[in-house]
Length: 240
Image (cartoon, rainbow, N blue to C red; front, side):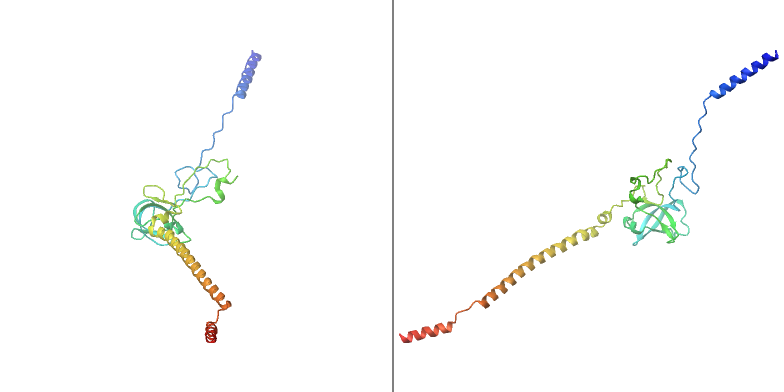
C-alpha cells in the first residue's frame, strides 16, 4: 500500500512538472514612458528624449512700442507663470532681436517668454527653430530606437487666436508701404536716371569728337589765298 501511494505521488509530481514546463512564458510588459524631471510638458516624455525648456510666463498682451530688438507689451491676460520682477505697471519688455520686425504695434499676441540671464530680460521668438545642417535629412542624425514625441517650443509668440505670426522674408516689406516703395521705387529710379545720363553722355561725346575731327581736318587742309587771286585778277585786267 505504501509503495502504491509513493508511485501515485511520484506520478502526480511528474505530471505537474510537465504541465508547468509546457506552459507558455508570460510576456514581459513594456516599460511605460516616464516624464523627465524638470519638464512641465503635459505629454509624457520617454527617457532619452529631449524636451524644450519651459516658458517662465505666458500672457496675452498688446504691443504698444518697440525698438530695434525688443517689444513692450501691455499685459491683457496672464495665462501661466509670473511676470513679477520683469513687468512694471502692467508693461513687460520682451527681447526678439531680428524677429522684432514681425511684430506690429497695436496688435494682440499670445507670448510665451523665458528669462534670459545673459541679457537680464524676458526673451521670445517668432520664427520656429530651424534644424542645423538639414535636420533629419542628414542620414543617421537622429537615428534612435525610442519613439520621441514632437513637442513645440513654448517660448514662441503667436497671434492672440493661436495662429502663427507670418515670418516670411518679404513680410516687413508688404506690411510697410513706404519701405516697399523705397525698396522697389528708389533703385528703379536710380537705374533709369543712370540710363538717361549714359545716353546723354554718348551724344555729347559723339558731338565733341565730331567737332574735334572737323577742326583737325580743317587744320591740315590748305585753304586758297583769296587776296592773291584778287591781285592776279586785277593785274590781268590792267594788262588787257
